Image 1 (cartoon, rainbow, N blue to C red):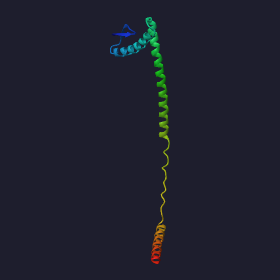
Image 2: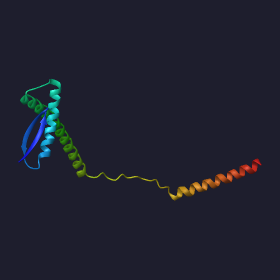
Image 3: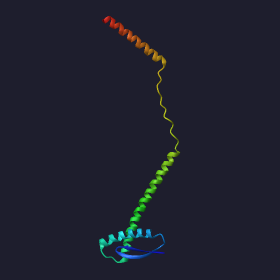
Length: 130
């Protein structure tokens, strides 16, 4: 077992942990120290047990808030995944049909004929006017 010296709220403690877990213990101790230091700064000197209890409760409160947020995010994610799966299983919409009008050749021929007549009439009108 490894021995780690940690400081919480200005007080030193010697704590045993498994080999290789020293880093995790020091990280946890820093979190607890941050809360304990806040308490000591606000209230002043506290008995060791009370300081550790209050700091632990503050961390537990923060952890509970994070857990609520994580649960809400997981629920939202599950709802989104369900919606995505529903959309994947939905039948694909029928392709949109677009109709393009086709002008019959008779109309084209008739319009060309009308244009030719209009030009002929215009030419006759110019001759009479001139």
